[in-house]
Length: 73
Image 1 (cartoon, helix red, strand yellow):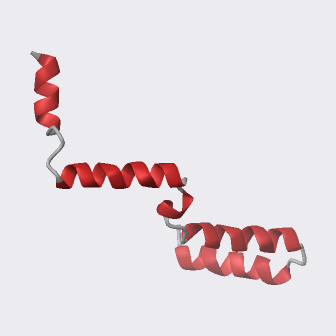
Image 2 (cartoon, rainbow, N blue to C red):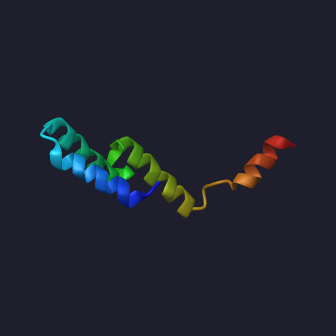
């Protein structure tokens, strides 16, 4: 696929359209590309992640390999 060709073709189509729903849809695609996943989380999810980070800082965690070994043996 020639990306420059594809972009050029899309620009031509965009220039010719008068359909506002197409223009809005394209704008939304570009807006959604720039979203940070953190902004999409609920406050409860953010709080849980932050608590997990604090637990790691305090050393309150089990290494993955250690955890797996516990249940394999």
